[in-house]
Length: 292
Image 1 (cartoon, rainbow, N blue to C red):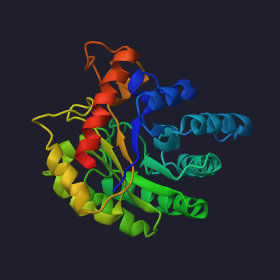
Image 2 (image 1 turned 90 degrees about the horizontal axis):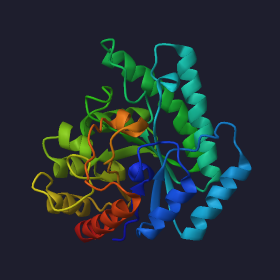
Image 3 (image 1 turned 30 degrees about the vertical axis):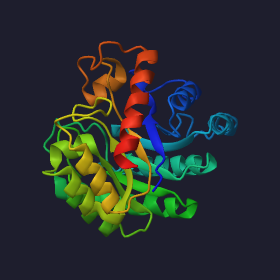
């Protein structure tokens, strides 16, 4: 079994809007063959020259890009406002078109509502579920047309409310009823919502399309009493998962990233790019030993 090992582009800073070509270089230099990125901010404008330039850069470094996003409120595909839902659906279709043009194979994340969710009003889960389901059913047809996996992420209750557990994720994609609609599992969120991360992975089984890994507190993977790494690795092997394994640590406070993922202190004493890259190399070697 040979996985592609990836890293989320935002680990080297606390901004979502960065020079993606620089992050491609940093990922390659740290030994990764995949970089997880947010779909480019020039969709739906579809700047072909920029997309070709980014694709050329990734190819030169031998780095595959995978795509992950959480929608802002103005694109909430489960909003009570039908105009907002329509904006989210059309934006998603544009993203899928752009990802196809960039030779992408997967779009993952909170692809059904908004993130992080605004809990100022008590949400109606059942109603929101149905609105999300109708929107995803429409979007996944475009994913099917382009041969792109549409990987639904379950996140913890403090960030979203529609889909928190693997059981809910399986029920949701079963109702979507598309071979392209599968699951993204994230070890940080599973550590909050699941009684057993290894059992949750086994429950996902063949529906697992993408895996995010990190420490229980979002640090870079390393031996840790709070994470049953060997058992997680065995669960991944038990289900025959051969997809991407992407590190998603967030370690720098402040900025839009720190605000959105609630990082209120630096999780490393030295948060220079050089030190983060050195630690990522160690983390990569560790997870390669765990997952094979």
